[in-house]
Amino acid sequence: MVEIIDATGLIIGRLSTHVAKSLLNDKELEIAIINSEKAIVSGNRKMVLNRYKDKRALNHPRKGPYFPRFPDRILKRTIRGMLPYQQDKGRTALKRVKVYMGIPKEFEGKKTKTVESAVNKDLEQYVELAEIAKVLGANL
Image (cartoon, rainbow, N blue to C red; front, top):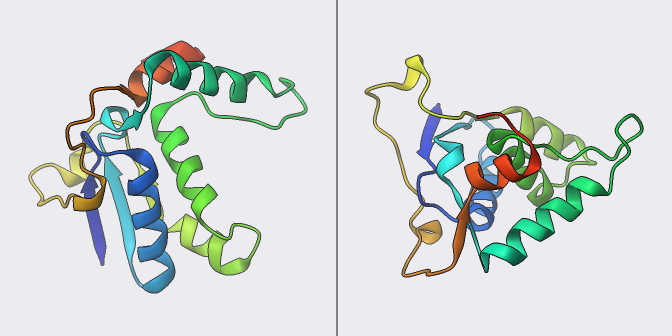
């Protein structure tokens, strides 16, 4: 069973916790997240961008730790942070998540789901993942 979630306007932290809990509770479930570049991070724009720049600057280009630049990979890394990744159940759960920028051909016209707890309700200060990715150096 594949569940398609449209990430447009959803807060990535709340979306990630929902996805992680769903994957750990249902061993058969596969989740596809589309429009990852339109997901948002809440907070002051300047503060959010500086936080992601600092995370990216922690690494050494050849030795790591590596932090992604593209929106789909940032979102998947956030989901990984919500899972017990060092255990087998966390690794197998992460393998059942697919994150896409835009809408792939296989999901066009199919019914998508949204996560009500992650919907942006009257947030005035937020940043889209596409903007964060551009600041980190991604060519979108």
